[in-house]
Length: 367
Image (cartoon, rainbow, N blue to C red):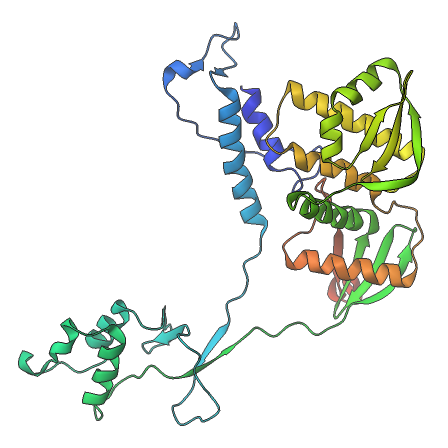
């Protein structure tokens, strides 16, 4: 066992797997033997690395990149449809991606490359009887010039030409999303085409807030919202000391606070809009996480901090929404889906879908 590697996997899957669930994983780590201590446990069930922080950072970024990459949907490639040369309305774009060669499975190649010229010569143009007839320009000219000269010199040959084409973008789904209502003041009921889906309003809003906060944080924008009336919060001695010791970190994430004497602090600005109890709870939770970060550093503490802030700020369950609020929330949620994001920062699903067929089977309309 090694607690560092276990922590690596837990942190790498943050925001993609539900809290309390743990991924199965296998890591292969190769190190010089002198950097591994196998004698830290009497039963030889644990190992320790000489430089655990470095191991953690390298492994974390490798795992995190793999996890994030697997979550991002691949965009559909534009369809390439060859047209006949006589088609007047088809004007080829400069250096498009084209299909070259015949058959059912044409090979995709860049527009004009030396490899394309060689393929053109080997498979398309009939073999010359003598080498003297081969144009010497092959060894002197650019590939584009070779291609043009080949076409000009053999006008009657059965040439499979590289045709002009139109690049068609995949058609966008024009089916609108219709809001049917809200149930339990927690879930938004929607219909899109032949699918009905439920949206968890807290999970959706939490993720939206998290993405907005992360973008602002990475751009080094100020996260703080100044309070109209400064808020005085009472803490016990240990809590206050922890907060003041981490004042600089609090400031980085939008907290404007200072000592107010006794066991109190005064808060001038926060990254969220909340009542006194909500702000107090967030400050204490934030301080606890900072203390934990000092004991056991993690590579992306920033994301954990933004998790906490977005959760406190997000619309809660059992909160009634107006129709415009639901429409705005669902629209922004669909924009997240286009970016491959389908969970809240804690890994819970934002929406659950039911097809018309599935619902009909539940009512025994279909078997």
